[in-house]
Length: 316
Ligand SMILES: [Zn+2]
Image (tube, rainbow, N blue to C red; front, side):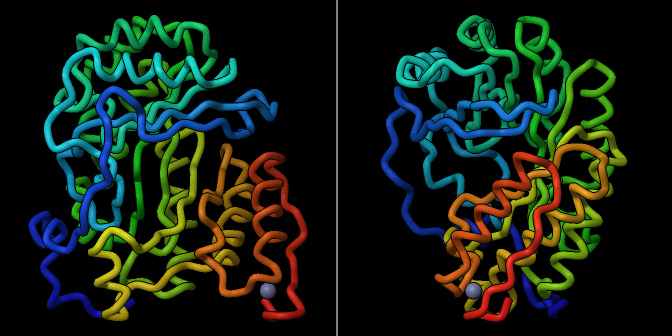
């Protein structure tokens, strides 16, 4: 682990390093797609994902780049249901839906509660609905939303890392107790949780990155989450590029991601996924990256270990 005692990570500093936002339109989501996911029942099924255009999150996390596709002002009531309708009209009919809003679904400045009912009615044909939230924004509003829903609700919460020194430096303004409390509260009310775990946040070496991702998966399952998604930490938001230049962050490798995924699946505590989006950025070798990506995808979908690939070009 490298020294960071001189570093004053706070929201102003993180914001000062940012580049420009992308141009977004509050009547349309900024993205939508269909991906395959292994469901709780063990079947591999299509899941629609809608990336809602929303106002910027109230937290400025060190590693986050989701602010790029946000509005400066809160979006008006009706905007989020309108965006969901817009995307559903263009998506094939599938059973599972993820609504990601570049922040917290239960942040009232992001999605006003008056929108819950129309969102519930738009999503009534789905079996599963997944939304994301900061653990400190998990409260009675989640239960009011759940009570309107037909699909099973799952809330995705960023645990990020349980490293005692790195977690506070992420400026997420949460501690492990907040995470545990949120998971317990949701579980007590019949709502399952998926944890986002960062692979190799800044300040850690590759092997420390693997170690702490594994410990973070253990902690998440001990708290009672149903599923973990491991996300390789990436540059691109300004602050992370600064740390990269300073040698305090380096990009994790696809092999480290494979190692953490193997560990998670072998733990048998619940579904564990590796985020393979943009995975090419996590390898220097063009010869084996496609095979390695396919292997991770196969493991995501089967939740079984697939033999490692040894590349004769890069030796990894
Ligand atoms: Zn290779």
